[in-house]
Length: 359
Image 1 (cartoon, rainbow, N blue to C red):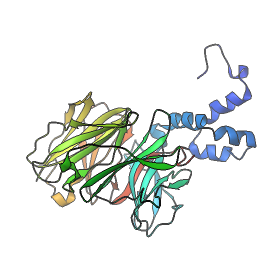
Image 2: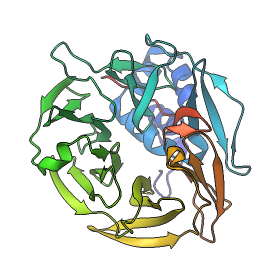
Image 3: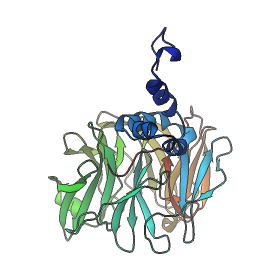
Image 4: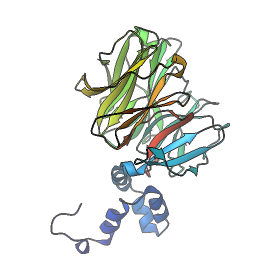
């Protein structure tokens, strides 16, 4: 931003180019690198990437990535009609078997994905097509569904990292991958022994305000439900309570970062579901709104939250693609929420950036 009284004519060409190109779409930045060596060097600096990313985190740059058995496609989001725009087909730049790719976490245009046939973890930017294998010969970077949990975050030094929580035969290991040093290391994590049991389901991590949050829910009626918090700078864990929802049915919590405030959609019920929206203030949950019960849904079609759009409609979708629309009397915000199912597809919502999976 220019100071008062300073015009573009007063600035050196280098600064003008920097200011302009940090505001253009990510794909145009890639094309601009081929203009000359000076532009290539400028657009490759970490300062440029960081500022461009911060200016790209707007709703107009959000995209939906959808994966089925045959194709992988990217769609723009049309907020006015609550739908996806025309698709572009994406070719995975890494080896895979029949699109067996699961999306585990995303942040600032990077996706952390798992190749289901080999269990390998990768970082991938679908906008630039760049990717990085995270698996190593000493067994780091391999993910097992329903046992492991993944969180992607960036620390105070602007280093992108992956937190990998592994449960193996009653033993829990916690490992951090650093993009800066391109290696894994173990960190201590003391928790209750029962959380190591496969009866507890760990969510993917949601990054908000310097902390990764995980829901940890016991897989039966009346079970224990907590939130585990990981401070990404001190690398310390702590446990906070779940919102005070009824424990008479199944419980599911979906965490969402909305404008750097942590929210949770807490759904409870057996034959009818009730879904409440909560926000975290300090270590305590404050209820924002309640919704009327959704019509009866069998447990095999248990719901995932998909998105919340600007016209006040809140969409709840079953795992097999059945859609419910709830009209909300609430000031809307342009934000789509990340999940792993969209109309029967695997997918994710991401923002188009030039953030690289490797240094």
